Length: 178
Image 1 (cartoon, helix red, strand yellow):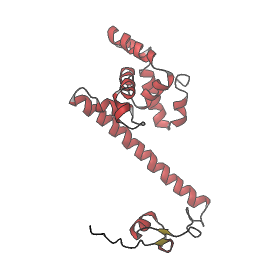
Image 2 (cartoon, one colour):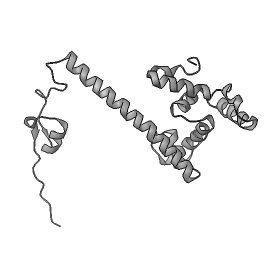
Image 3 (cartoon, helix red, strand yellow):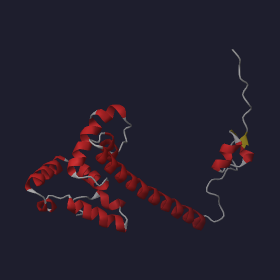
Image 4 (cartoon, rainbow, N blue to C red):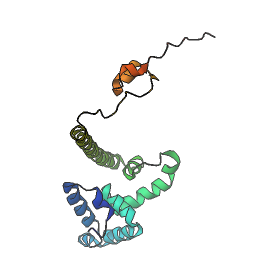
């Protein structure tokens, strides 16, 4: 399995690696022999038309090879003109869903993956904060002592943790009548 998806193993957690391996195995041509003959031929053909990076992305996004092929076509076609460059394959499939049920399927898949990513990000932020406090117990993460004063609303400074001593409140603007 590592031979098939070498880059994915760098990003895995223990539980994630198990899910990634199971998902990757399920998408290999050997695993598709349990499917019907017609579907097997289509899946193997689509799978073969994807390069290693696309197969890895399909696994990460939990898409079948056929879904990944369709997403690539959409991302290279209409979505390229209308969307940001980093639109995910799931978003492209959801935007171009062929039915309400398909749109709901991709929305739920994206929501699950997004939720898991937020959990990973929060866990990382907690670990980083703990590491900073452990390694540098007497230092603030950001030292505003030598920072120049900035013109900013006090509310924005407070929200960002910038000491009020480093803030010059903007003067109220006078409206010009025409």
